[in-house]
Length: 94
Image (cartoon, one colour):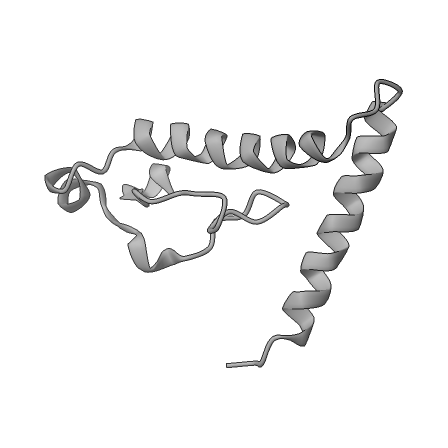
């Protein structure tokens, strides 16, 4: 997106999917136009990282188990990803 001179300006955990795809493209605009409203590539990058960290933190907060392993995390992540795909497939087609 940035390589094509586009900026989002509003990346949150609500518009980044579990597989790190950006949705809510209504906020995307040309970098020149976006900069007038304070949008920037660096803000997109920071926001994107924060959105992904939010996902990871959400899962770790669910777990108060010191025996939790990376494999456990991957299993949990894959379950949540599957749930998201199921929701997507049930959504009305437009």
